[in-house]
Image (cartoon, rainbow, N blue to C red):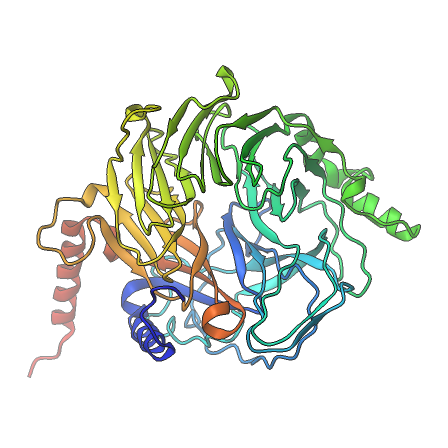
Length: 516
């Protein structure tokens, strides 16, 4: 792991120290071991209600045959026997793998899979503090249970891999949900196309030898080269945005198809019905059978690979993008396909990620290979001139991989990086505390991952709850870690309110103390 503090022993010591502080730092915490590292995760509002929280995991998108010992012990009762929340949510993850310590062989016969699971999250202030730190790091969480499997398209090469050889295969890199209808998701792979899925209508499949691929509901075409990471779905309208190695940003509308997708589970013309019929007749059901959608526009302005894209929260016609050319570009589809504003040298390195504030549309975040996060006010941006960020946040020791604004407070956001930390910031705190040893604006640091945190997502239906995922290939020789956690509200609530509560608690303890 880059800049993580040296040896494995040092990482183990830091991890043990963090684990001992879990009862103090967190209101709730769950750890789920992954056989394969994840590249993406999402906490999504449910597409159907029920007694459990919905968890969607895109698992293992390659055919691997290998030997690995796994513990089946799930540890103690993290909830302490208390009641569980009924608030539904889902989490989405995509997986890849680096072979480090095992002999790996693949022949392409086992299918790639997209797995839907359900998860139970404890209500705020319910989890017993003495139990939430008692988990087995190498075990799967008892709260995460598989519900459905979709066989995802993806060509796998026939290759044998030995120790310390990197395995590169056709995998899912990103998953994003449609805010207006969260059962509709988009997936990005190492290909030019974006695949659209109605995950509720898709039938449950079995990941067995020779299984035919599930058929995506739509295929969005328009890129000339692979589009691997940059992917967004619009909060305002059913629009999809993508960026790729062809240096372009591509915009689609799936408005005309949404009603059909939403009703697909009610009739035999659904993708699931088509799959079952074709599979029964011996035909192959794959993405070639899916309808294709042409773009509304292709936008050119970057000089290198586009790494991330994001819509303006209030408009399907305004969006932004960042890339390996270190540029931040704002676009307005109503004025054409040229950049509306192009900020050159937004960072001193490749820009990996961008996010647009959903609670204050004037502010945009960018994260870079230069280890920093920068906050921009779009009202002050101009092309060709000197555009300066409102703030620079320097708290990471390696490349920043993901940034996201909090849905709970306009001034709060998170950032994750290759240093294995997820930092939570509040730009309103800058300058309010003097002589602080921590970086300006930083008020919480999640240190529960041993390796780079490749993605995280705030849960909009459960305030201050985050799902984060790490690729542990460099630190443990393979696998990944999915964590669902909620920091203690004593950390983010107003200081005077917290102090008043602590005084009340202190008085209660004093009244309960027996007199000598």
